[in-house]
Figure 1 (cartoon, helix red, strand yellow):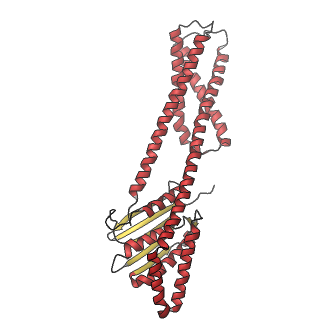
Figure 2 (cartoon, one colour; figure 1 turned 90 degrees about the vertical axis):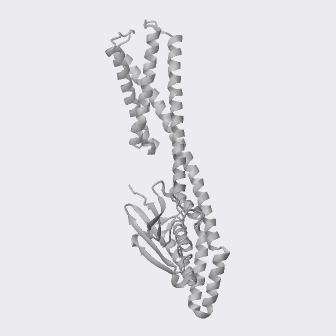
Figure 3 (cartoon, rainbow, N blue to C red; figure 1 turned 120 degrees about the vertical axis):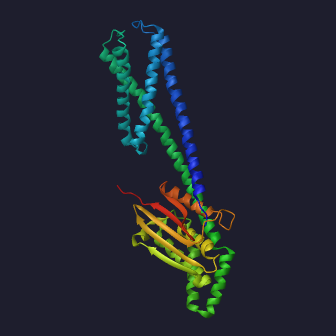
Length: 373
């Protein structure tokens, strides 16, 4: 077996780069959007001056810059609040009233700050014939629409990004499933496996015909499952365990007492779903790299528990984790299994390989269970 932490770290590095790119894009659009609004306000004030407003041009421009800067800051600090409240996970029906409320609240805050600063702290007089209450109300309505437009654009982008990532992950999952199917066929229908199985069957025909017939049935079950499992996203753990038992029974014909098996399966785990060929991949690696190279063989232990809202699967075998190129596998099978887990069950699903104690390697998969409201 081979450690897959390097592949997982690479995936985490890619995700970090994507987040940094999104942050740069966000800052670019923030500066462009608020800068465009400042330019429009400035040009409008210059082209259509208010005859009742006798403030110097420099004062007016400073007021516009202060309004734009405060709007940028308010919109920027709305982001962590919306992230904390998980608004990005909401549909449009529950999201729309929240956006309207947030727009009005942001507009009130913006108006209170700017009007309070200019007319309250600085003490500038109202240069208009209209009532201040009317002007403040109009400002709140105008700025509310401005913030509502900002929020709609912000969530439209995240909705598009979420749909785009979902589509990409769907294609990645389809590709991963097909690759898993091909790897399963290659590993189970390869000439070495067929040759070893047929040789074992030939020896059994005279020695133990009943066991030979059973071995033929097990081989047929294994090949049939390999062909059919690629069409499914998940299978019951019990079905996967049955096929793994058939696989290990065939290997025990060849290895005899050198291959020992210990099962510790909680009954409730049998009904839970896992990706097809996940357990088979872990067990096959355990036989190939933990039992076969050792003259004395060894024990393979399969443990499955429903713990903390997740299915925890452990497959252990004798041996040690070797660097690539020193008798270990390439790690492709484990990496692809980890990627399939992530695509189907999300970031909480993990696949780790570790040395539990001297001369013992443990492959552990954690699959989160679906939560029901």
